[in-house]
Image (cartoon, rainbow, N blue to C red; front, top):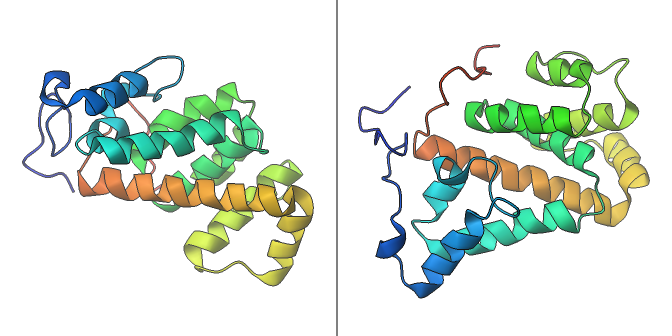
Length: 196
């Protein structure tokens, strides 16, 4: 359901933050957020544009994103599968639209993306992809991970890797809720996940 109070420039309930309205720390945070080499996939027209209304939140949120991109023991493909299953579990159209192409660039096969989108069985998928999808489905569907699945994931990813995987899913879920609260509109022409 779309709010009637969508700002035409930001495409959400909040206006775009103006750099001149921020204090020096906020301006520095904004500059880092919008740096194409380190910043957001979608710039001001996504969660960054919302979080910059509280520059300290934006700064700390970006630190986690930068950790995932640069220091995590998980490779980019595993991260993108985790992001997609989280986006799909929350019907987060905006996150799906941003990360479907990122997942493809990271080498996630069409079969994996289709299984996530259509909530299909994971039989025949890459073992890591299937494991991450099942983790996400249990975590967000049951709010619990069965011991057998937990043991398989801990064996595969190790304690550090599993903590980083679940933390990435939690972070992505938080972003899904942020986007929903501010009714961030799906960019024109992007694929929907709702009701699929």
